[in-house]
Image (cartoon, rainbow over all chains, first blue to last red; front, side):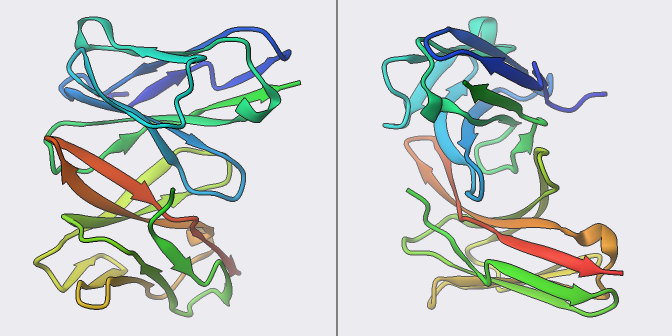
Length: 113
Length: 113
């Protein structure tokens, strides 16, 4: 399968714990995006990478959130000291060109108890 | 913040009928895209229409774009039960060399067999 993959698909954690999600984009795509989606809402942009450079971050991305894309391949999104409000679906997408469509992964559903 | 506003927010139709969903947005855009999301899954790209296009077709899908009214519509003809999903419009601005995608809150479509 050459689509975007995300791991894990589901994560349940206790408040205050750290969690890390992984995204593997389509191999030839140099652009990678992270979004967060809460119930009944559309996805909201979190951050964007072009190759290994993180070029844009949303105000939604508080200091507890950090994202990396070493070597411009897979990306990780870490949330430190999770809060109940962090419970959401975290979606990753990738694209090849600046104006091209984004291909989404299946998402990681985070539940903070 | 979410730019696109879909209308209606929920739509229930019989199989075989046509479904029309509308999207309004506020700022100028480079292109507009429609996505489908099955419950609890990632988003699937349906169609992209550029700002200089007025109408586009793809199979049973027809998308229109009116940049003067800042609105778009998605028509699904001859609906099937498998079309049951949430549909999101996403506006795309090209800013500082990357693609900023802003999603609406979606239209939840139910196609009754």
